[in-house]
Each structure stands twice: as C-alpha cells, then as structure tokens.
Length: 245
Ligand SMILES: NC(=O)c1ccc[n+]([C@@H]2O[C@H](COP(=O)([O-])OP(=O)(O)OC[C@H]3O[C@@H](n4cnc5c(N)ncnc54)[C@H](OP(=O)(O)O)[C@@H]3O)[C@@H](O)[C@H]2O)c1
Image 1 (cartoon, rainbow, N blue to C red):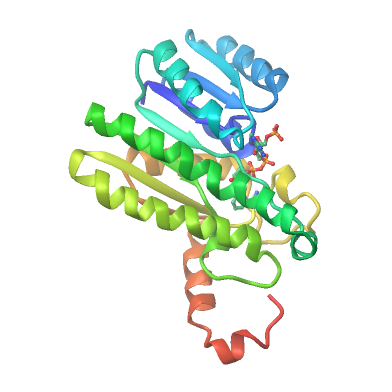
Image 2 (image 1 turned 90 degrees about the horizontal axis):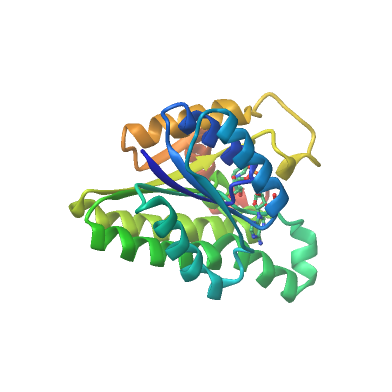
C-alpha cells in the first residue's frame, strides 16, 4: 500500500494505523479538520522517514469540498492505492432525542459525509480498476439500542453502503473493508467507565493493517465482538425491548 489517503487522520485509531502503515514506507495525504494536529502528524511521519506526506484541512460535512480534496490527494500522491476513512463522533443519545438539529448534524458526520466520500472514491477506483477502501463503522450498527441508536443507525447505514459497494467493486479487484470496533480507548469514549472489554488503539491498528493486507471484507475488532453482537442480534424482540441496553 504505497499511496494512502486518510480522512479523519487525527483520530487516535487512524494515528496508530498510520504509524504501522508508515513502517512499510507508504506515502500519505492526511485529511482532517484541525490543520495544526495534521501538521504535527506530518512532521512526525517525516522523522520516521516518510518522504511524501501532505495535509488538507476539511470538515467532512462540507460535502462541496470533497471533490477538490480528492483531486488534490490524487495529484499530490500521483494516484491512490488505499483510502482509509476514520472520522466520527459519538453523540449523547439523550441530546439527540431532544433535538432534530443535533440528530441531523450527527447523521451528517457519521453517515452522509462518509457515503458522499465513498461515492467519489468508488468512481475513482473503478476507473483505475484497482484499489482498496477501508472504513471504520462500528459494532453499534449491528442492532439499534436505546443508549446510542442515532450513532448506531448512521454506522449501520455505512455498513450496508459498504456491503453494496463491495458487491459492486469486488469483480474489478477493488477491496472494500468494513471495520467494526467495539470499545477502543480513545477520546471518543473517554466519558465512559473503562472495563475489561476495552481495547487499545495500537491493538486495533495492528488488526486493521492485517485485515487490509489480507483483503478481508469485514473486521470485528477485537474478534470477540462478532460473537457478542451475534448474541445481541439473536435476542428476540419481546425480550430485547425489556432490556436497557
Ligand atoms: N473509540 C471507540 O470505542 C470506537 C468504537 C467503534 C467505532 N469507532 C469509530 O472509530 C473511528 C475513529 O474514532 P476514534 O475512536 O479514533 O475517536 P477520536 O480519536 O475521537 O477520532 C474521531 C475523529 O473524527 C474527527 N471528526 C469528527 N467530526 C469531524 C468533522 N465534522 N470533520 C472532520 N473530522 C471530524 C475528529 O477530528 P478532530 O481531531 O478535529 O476532533 C477525530 O479525528 C470513528 O469513526 C468512530 O465512530 C470508535
């Protein structure tokens, strides 16, 4: 994977993944809304021996900026081999319940922006007849729960979009990876109490890089979330509705 576009590059999971990808001597185009953080990352990558790295400041909800960002990334790197999408926010569900505006804002960040980016990326890779797309969704998308269903619905939408994309692009040798983490120790969930199910971002990054190399299409990380979510999905509705999940 030589030429890599990372959207949401300042995410702690993305940062850990970028460090691992850099060990193979990749080149990067880093996109995020905080240019200062991106510049620090670029400097760090240069210290690690990465010669080609540039940054682009973009709020992902500025859909009109996506095409320019992508064309700059392609020009700078001389093409793309991998696009990795990692941005996201975990809203307070009770705040979403009280506000249509908040619900729509969060959906725009976690769903609309991602499928807009994927539409452009799919077109690019399809024309190129090769490439790799990796996106972080979440186990929260596997079944709607009262504690986080605005976020969960957005992530479920992303996962279904990725399923369709994978089905469309597979025949052309383009790989689409849906990454479904459980709890990962990053600022996103810093307000929650830690428990034994939490994973380190470095561990998650290692599994992401391995899944990309092995051309996996779905990654539950850590692996046990596949079974936890399988059980949660199998709970009958009449019992599920009585639980506070
Ligand atoms: N941590 C978990 O437990 C967990 C579990 C399942 C899935 N995930 C998913 O993993 C991905 C990475 O999250 P993380 O855990 O690494 O959390 P994080 O460190 O808080 O990263 C979230 C990233 O999203 C970016 N972002 C948010 N809104 C944005 C916007 N409007 N425009 C551009 N960038 C925006 C943030 O940018 P700033 O740096 O500028 O704030 C930050 O880089 C997310 O998609 C998240 O939903 C996380």
